[in-house]
Image 1: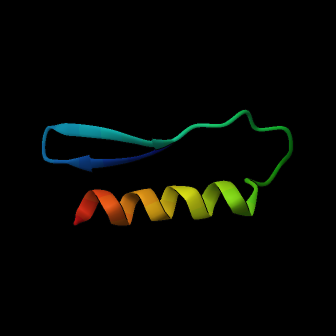
Image 2: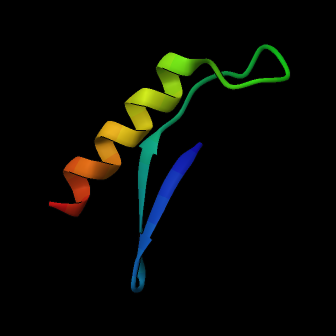
Image 3: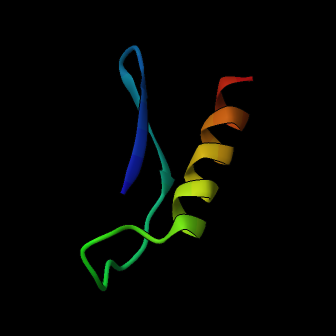
Length: 40
């Protein structure tokens, strides 16, 4: 799960089923884009 906290609110940015040790780059990119959208 990727989340961001705004005061008392927590926003789920992205969730995926992890199948290895590292998070896939596409999932990280998606979460970062959604965080940028949430902050604007």
